[in-house]
Length: 206
Image 1 (cartoon, rainbow, N blue to C red):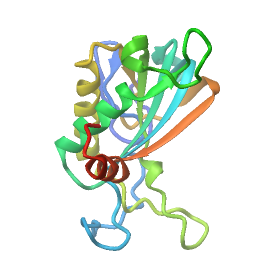
Image 2: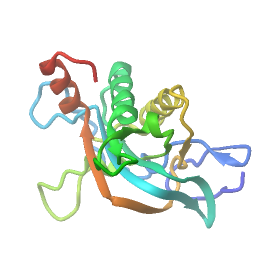
Image 3: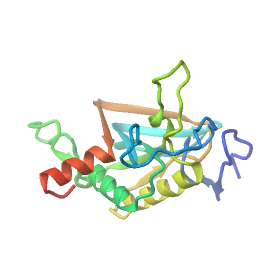
Image 4: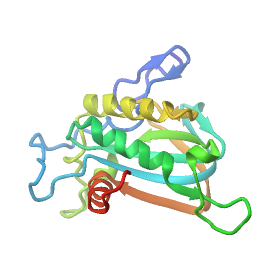
């Protein structure tokens, strides 16, 4: 493939494009004991950072592997909880949140990605689970096991594509350069536990 030999995990290619996900593997600093639902310090199932962009792209070894125009750059972290229903809820939240301005200028947050037919760039980002409570070196023991995280990220991307939006991705295990122009700036943090809890409490759909 065009990116053979990239360090940081087994880089996978399909034709001339990389398969997802970028950056979830590549570190072995993980605790073999996974956190469990309900226990202190348990990681959320999914964490997503949304950045509203006018353009964004991912490069590996100087070659662009994913690029979008107006839309969202999504940094996606997966924990060691395997729950497809959570992925569905988070995908719905991403595409339906109103983060684009009103064309008439009356509101900064009026239109959703679906309404705008926004483009999405998904980059898997295990460092969203950095634990910095002790010492000077972050621990990533709460991040999902790489093979599972890759599969769940692929499932998440498939859910987004089912909405009819153009979705680009980074490369699994590669050392990447991510470039973006953040509009606003607008940067939103989502975690699945908070999203699901608020939805149930409100008695409404996500």
